[in-house]
Length: 93
Image 1: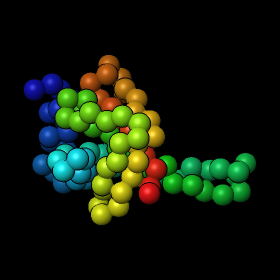
Image 2: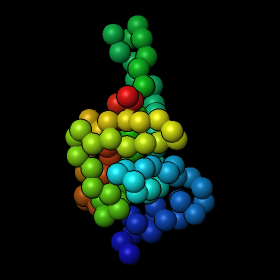
Image 3: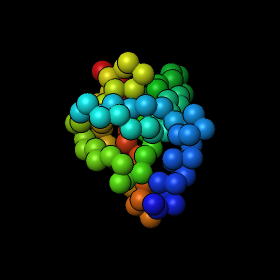
Image 4: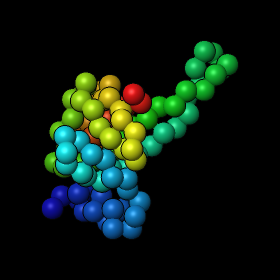
């Protein structure tokens, strides 16, 4: 098991990850919904993201995922660090 997978397994066992369902399969990912300032500081917008080991999940732009009963569409997937970890940007549907 790679170090990033071990890290995520430990986080899952500690209850720090969120269940994410993709095409009927469930994996645990780090789900984040930080606010982002838009319109030159006059408004806030949510920027939904999930982080996960690349070996656990294969996502592409246009895919849909379910997190806590809400459906999201993948906008973009990027490698983090050495590529063993991925970050998917999501849009709530």
